[in-house]
Amino acid sequence: MNSLKVIDGKAAAARVLLQVKHDIAALGIQPGLAVILVGDDPASQVYVRNKVLRAEETGIRSLEYRLPADTGQASLLALIARLNADAQVNGILLQLPLPAHIDENRVLQAIAPGKDVDGFHSENVGGLSQGREVLTPCTPSGCMQLLHDTLGDLSGRHAVVIGRSNIVGKPMAALLLQAHCSVTVLHSRSQNAAQLCRQADIVIAAVGRPRMIDASWLKPGCVVIDVGINRIEDQGRSRLVGDVDFDSALPVASAITPVPGGVGPMTIAFLMKNTLTAALQQATPRSLPEAPCPSTC
Ligand code: NDP
Image (cartoon, rainbow, N blue to C red):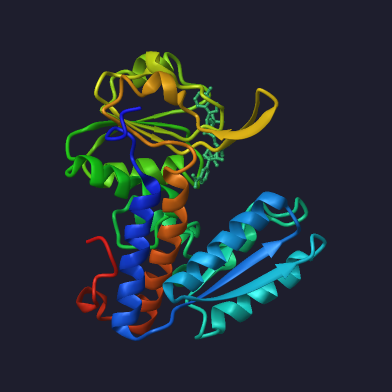
């Protein structure tokens, strides 16, 4: 395997976390992150544990709220209202998915936009599409960092985003547009998807279909960012693969993220970065431009 081509997401995430830790220590603050988990979904429990661990390592105080699966929407809204009003809490993360009886959109909208470290509140979504400085979703922000690390300036590149979800595909397209890329978004109704994708300098795969994108979708020399996390059975063993067929794409791409070890670690790192950004904005709402730059600017 050509290791120079394989983008090391763990190392990139470690750099982001180190900078966040350094900034927190230099500023002498301790940002607070509230993490809410409703129910006992095993994957969500792992994600929450990892987020809490990373927070502690970087000097962020984490507060965990583990609520039973039958928690009512009114109780969840009451907790969010309490956390919104708590000056010790700078960021609020509501782990998704929520149990079916809770209206996800309703509770996400209840989080104060300034504490919305996932960047899912419509005020932040709107701000992103208008190019304003807002809290942006962690996974697309992590992908942007990997692209800048790999390519430098992205201006004028043609990026194809496969997937149009609110949490990955759409904010990803908005960030690429903000970085002056020409952006094409593909989805389940797209026709000639592979042909369109072959025109891309940058391919972002966020579909949720194991190894759907193989070498035939790729222009030689393109950069591939694989967001997909899919659990498959392979020779009697369970393992994670991305949306891209890594082995087939590797000889064609100029750089590619692996799964695991690519985008995943960046998502958590940018959650910590967003928590620091939120704390700085809350501390100095009118003087943010003068505030120390939290990390990768
Ligand atoms: P969603 O299921 O919400 O969205 C999937 C998107 O893929 C939809 O827009 C859908 O189109 C599109 N799609 C489905 N089939 C096709 C197809 N055949 N051709 C083109 N597009 C298609 O998924 P998410 O965006 O939430 O997640 C995508 C993947 O990323 C998942 O594997 C998820 O686990 C992973 N993920 C990883 C994260 C990380 O930290 N690394 C974080 C978040 C997600 P349509 O809109 O038409 O239905």
